[in-house]
Image (cartoon, rainbow, N blue to C red):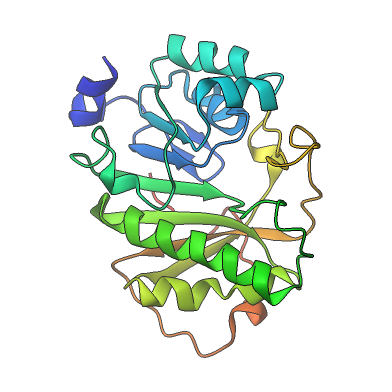
Length: 246
């Protein structure tokens, strides 16, 4: 059922919107934690048939790290979502299921290199590790993107996170910024952001000021200001051509 839908079978269903996302789009969710974001979308859409969900963890690790993971996995499976475990966010196009498919939206919420290094967030060494993950994601995801599709990254905008330099990483992967929206956790009821690593992996982290950055192979816009000075745009009321379309 999910495979048939991914080939376009349900594209004529009425559109339902949850945050930035529409039920009529094929959506690949990358690096999910306890899968609560994916489940929020599926519940809002009334189905998970347009969702393909990946986690870097295998089943045993995932369910050990997150108390709600097993329940969320079961619910998503019953709602028709495709769930792929043990998937590297930087090698999406190598996966046997993913490499033959293309998506309208590819989404990675709050990528992070983990806490095992023992470095603080403002340490240049850790920033470089973060950048490696994001750069690999951009390059891999762009190979699975439909011609007019979008690659999304939700990310904190305050120092030191602005030093990750998402715009440069995207440009190096031939992607262009086409929109920026405030990230509102409330847009996805039930979503629980998780640390994802270390002894507190199932605990939330403070979101603070953060945005979803939207990149595309199309609609290039000239950016003359540094990344950290770009003002966040509202989720709703984006200008025509911004990419936030049903």
